[in-house]
Length: 148
Image (cartoon, rainbow, N blue to C red; front, side, top):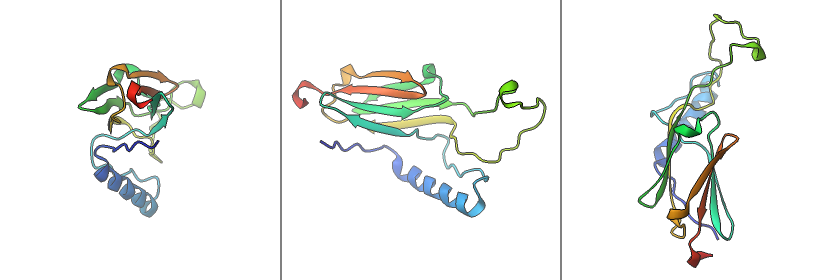
């Protein structure tokens, strides 16, 4: 059974993503991407079995303690912040300390993020569980007894 999930605030960010891809094509991928607002939306996948929905959120590089996950007015709301990645200064990459870095390509979003999804009516909100594993946040949303 397909459950329609509407992604909040997606209309403008979708246009901004398209504009960012256009700028990449016109000016080259090394040009800093256009970002019209201060936050970004992490990528998600949604799975379902007979007893629950499973949402997985790509949060590589995010400290799980810094993630705020809530249910608000029938919506699953996720907020947090990912620091800007920077290369190590120790041996693994042989980077010379004191040598300035120049950005050549930027594709990894960083800074504050926000994502909100409408919950299917069949979800038992009181039993939602989440765990963080290998850079992914997994959210289990059990279905109520009447929808199994």
